[in-house]
Image 1 (cartoon, rainbow, N blue to C red):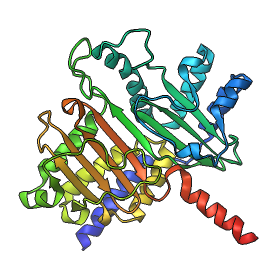
Image 2: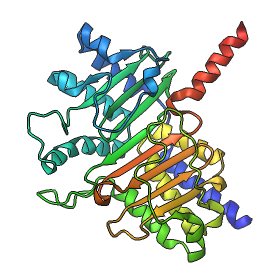
Image 3: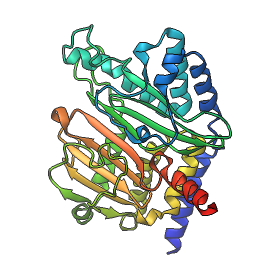
Length: 343
């Protein structure tokens, strides 16, 4: 027990020293206001929705048209202002991945021999949407979304209170040819999963691996309200110290896509829900040999899913969900309950 408590303290120290920073949405607020100021009335009507609109949970990650204002319809000043929102929304790590995912559409367009004038696989086919009135004293939200990217954030009193769902995907996962052959945006998400699996004993693998056949996609898909994955896998407390560190390294990788202040609070929330309740589950190929695989990590708050099965296992989908507060719904529910209790 003493060793376990010392290890928990060690984990907490590492993550909080790395993440420690005030949670503030001021930079996103400033960037969003600056962006909105560049728009004409018609564009403002297209980009704006009420905060409690059902559109907030109408999210997806396939190459389809969205509601909101897309980059292609903007002039250069507006595009630059829109990208500033994206940059303010994520950490440096997250921003770099998001922009790389958008640019990967150029490579995919070449691979699929899509005609240049087509909007299919267009790096400008990303949509910006604002929910409510952005201010330091209001509750408002914003979404940046297109193929393989969905960022959904909520701010209340100038503080990020929700940053899920956060989806990132890549096709190709590894560029197969050309000048960027071997380029891999979500490399760590892939490799760290295999590293943890490889560290398990045969007995541990029997608990962690629930199927030899991976899923075609993440199980939570684009559901507005995610449910825990039914495959429980192996528990955190069934891992040795080194394996626990490997599991937490994967969790940290996903959480560090967020701005540091929110990342710190989200990690604390995950810990409060119980690190010993974290579970790691796997299906599919057990070695990184180019065949399909899937993993998930979850407790009562966190759900991380990773799937690489499509296009001959060269097409990654990954997502972070907060099982208690996607789209800030927990906050919204408590707000309505408080208002009704006054009547």
